[in-house]
Image 1: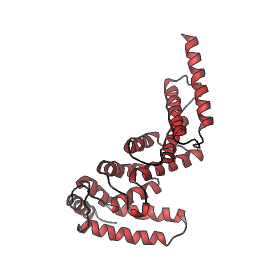
Image 2: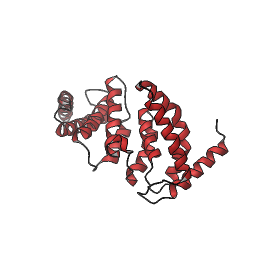
Image 3: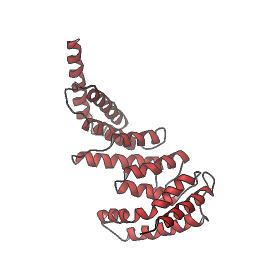
Length: 238
């Protein structure tokens, strides 16, 4: 295990490297960046030799701690230079379900307009939106939950960016289903349940507007009936 002193020095070196280039410039030539980029390329080659997706995720989970000090220093000292290591770690954190860690980098990446490495072939915003949406939809489909606040942050970070409508629809679908999962009672007598149902309906309607094949019509119908019935009961009591 690396000593605290060595980890501190690694963070300082990363901070200085990140500060050495202006926004939009390349970090090529910065020694700590070059060192971590060489490690990244070695890890990518290792991943390419593995066919199992599950095993790839295990390897990513194994190596990610080795980038933690670089990430901390880069986020602290960075001025927005293009950083292939940082953006790749962001994606790998999503792959390994470290969504909070991914968002830590995503805030910086979206603020400074960092691009993903060319191998991803899409914008940072599009990959963020789709990977978070896919992760949420998979968890919800399997009977689990997903942090709606994290999905909302992804929506806010990517709002106004250009991406395929189907990707944005998928994100709104995930937001809607995540909100539905939080509803405690279908009667919506609790104001929080009513608000969650209303929010869910709005997100699912947006998903349907963006993609007619979003697969949300039945959920919208159910939510609208729940809301209408709850409003009717509330009106009868007044």
